[in-house]
Length: 228
Image 1 (tube, one colour):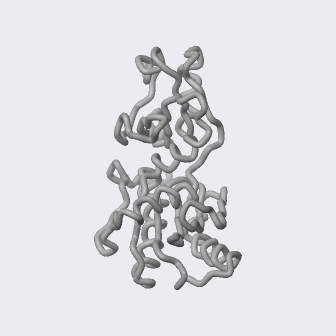
Image 2 (image 1 turned 120 degrees about the horizontal axis):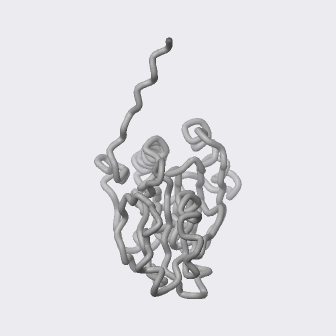
């Protein structure tokens, strides 16, 4: 079975994992803002050491491609591309939202729709809608939330909302019985690895030289206010 090293840096949470086929060998997750650039490579080295593995043992590098934080994705993808190039291993990119939905799908006993949400400032989120089978119903998109969001869907069936973007959506639809929320779920590298294994089997690899993260929206730099 393929040994994959997976990297997830699309939010303030930094996560790495080693998976062999569908088995998660080890994973680490760090809930510390602005830690990606300083600690990601250290986390990867510690992970390899904890499993008594060498980088030469790795068969592929998997990375969360977004959407998510511009800076976080840039750091994660740059690290993954560097490893893939240096080791001569394939690069596999996985949707951040799909990985979140995959993690929840394992416990979706009510066969609810799965709606991961990543915070995109103010009342906007990055989201997608997945069937219980993980087939995609609505593609990844930015969405400005209001009281009418998902109302037609919620009138017909239960929907599981999760991710840091779902936190600000909950008060808007608290009266809808079919709206269910999972608290505290953030993207995980081990879930990236699970989806990446399937893509590895199908040779769905990225071009290491030209691959770029899926930012969804163009990066907007802010201009600092002048001091009085």
